[in-house]
Every structure is written in structure tokens, then in C-alpha cells.
Image (cartoon, rainbow, N blue to C red):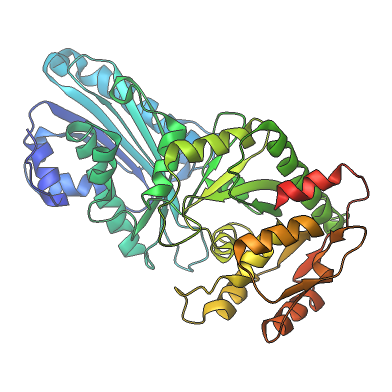
Length: 456
């Protein structure tokens, strides 16, 4: 039985080594053999370790696990799991199967290279039995390594791997206990988990969309990705070298009419960026984004069922969605810029634009100016969608925003017609003049009035 007290990696590895029923293999590519090393180092490894292998050479890896996939990918990880599990059962099931809970742990990692030019990330997986001769269960994680050096990243991978195996055997009562076990000593500060997949009886009743939202709410991930196709990918694969339009919002109206309105506005932003890119051959992607944080610091953020209902309404329109931990646009800029140097655009209604200007950003030393400099870093612009004058007047009263004036055209207000009293007005005018804020065209059709109202 596992000890009830909070355990470090040494105690976790030793507990597993002393558990006569747990026995398995380790296959690790990249970042050393840091997970297996814990079990070999603490003593009693012969009780747990059937084999360790590190297939660093590409030809060796292809010979073992097949060719045709990237070496740091979910496909390669699954091939590793299949191979190691099959070998384990072939070699040991007859002699040990009746009294052993087998497991196969694998990872494929791209830790920080010598030049520091790569994206440190990787895949980690575990296949295991809950009881001898039982059906296997499986958990797969995508992780981002946040430590500044290769050595520290290797260390973090080792700690997380030990925690994953330990949590699977002893902390699977709830998803909370499982991820609390993973988080101990390493996750959040040093490693992000932005994708999780699972199957088998050990995870019966677990819901993957809810678990992805849980990763963000609990601070395991900066953002997670949802696809209308059902299958999901980690954000780094979705955003890699892509030109992106983000449509942020709260999306607390989940009815089909509002979902259609939001889709139309995002489509307008994608079309605008397509014009910018011209004949480059790049096709921009449009993604809705919402936050698990509250609009006001003193209020709690939306609960997971509420978030999922909003996300589902967007997915039902065929849209792709990023759920962010933070609500500030500059945090979204920093996240997307990890994975692409291509243009990033936000498409927002005037109400969200005003809210971004009104926020004081007290968590930043440079407050509003620092927030703007972070927001517009690295080829970022905001497409500002117009709004009817009546809706804008009503919204400003409710939001208690002061100092804003505007002129209108046929009852509509564009970002160009919006004015703010000095001194912030000078900053707003500068952003317009430098094309950081791009006013979108006032809609010509009468039906577009609904669009502007919903975009607010």
C-alpha cells in the first residue's frame, strides 16, 4: 500500500520497487533515461524494472518502432507503447502474469538543444494493468518543458515520469487525486501538461473535454485546444508556423443565433488577414478563444460545465477553440508567439477594445503601457469590428467607462470614429496611426446590425 504522507520522487520510486506486484519496462528517447534512473538509484530495482532502453539513434528507433512518423510525436509514442507492451507480455506473461501488474512506460522528448533554438517539449505515456491478467489502461500526456537548461529539463522529466507511474498505481481514486500526484514537485512551475488522452477501465467515466478544461482551471496548462472533429491536438501542433486570427470573448450566450454571429465575425477577420497575406500561399486559421479566468479579480472564474457549454456551442458551428488560463490579450499573444512567427491578429468588437483600454493591469509593473507593448509584440494587430451607436452607448453605461466619444455613419461607429480623452486618447490615436488597431469596414447590409450587437 502507498504511504499516506506526501511523498517525494525517491519515496515514490522505492515504494514501487518494493511492491512485488508492479513490474515493467522503460523506453526513453531524449532527455536521458531520467525516469528509469530513479528506480535504479533508490534500491530494489530488480523488483520493478524488467528492462530499460534508450533508442537515441534514428535508425535504431526506426528498427524498433517503425519509420514514417516524427520522432517526437504522439504517433511515435504510441508505436513505442505497442512495441514495449507486446515484448513485455511475450517474454514474461507465462512466468509472471498470474501475480504481476505489468506496465510499460515510454517517453520521447525534445529537451533544450545545445544552441537553445528548439521548442522543448515531448510526449509521455504509460500502459498498465490494474490487476494481474487484467485488461490494460493507458494514459498519454503532451508536456512543455519550462526550465531554462537541458539538465533541469531532464531532471523535471524524471520527476514527472516517476509521479505518473506512482499516480496510476496508487492515486487513481479521482482525477483530482491523480493530477495532484503528478503536480507534486514539478508540474506548473517547470512543466506544462496541455494534452491528455486515456483509455481503459482505470479511467472509466473520465471525460476528456472536462479534463482538458480542468488542466487550464488548475494551472497545469496555459491553454488547451478543442476541435469540432472530436480528436484534439496540443496547441503547439495546431499553431506551428501558422498565421492566426483569434476571436476572444466570453461567449456566455450559447444559443445558435449568437454562435452564428460569432462565426461570421471570425470569418471577417480571417478574410482580412487573407488580404494582408496576398499571394504568399499561407492560409490563415481562425480560432475562438475564451478564458477560464473571471472578468473581475474578486469574482470566481466560470465553472467547468459552464465553460464546456460555451465551447460546445462554438464547436457545433464547426469552429476551433482555445481555452486560455489568463484573460488578458497580451497573455494570448505570448502563448501563440511560442509556436509561430507568422502574423497574429485579434478580431474584436468595440466593447472588448474599450475594456482592454480601461483595464489597469495592476499585476504588471508597467501597467497599461507594459500590457500594450506585450500585446503588440511580434507582428500583432487588432481588427476592430464596428458597433451600432445605440449598442455602444448602452454598453458604456453598463461598463462605467468614461471619456469616450464618437461620431457615427448611418448609426454605426468604427474604431476610427471612436475617441478617448487625453492623455490616453493620444495613445489610442497613436495605435490607430501605426496600424496596430485596424478599423474594419462598417457593414452595408441591414442584417449586420445583429452581428455588431452580438460581437459586443
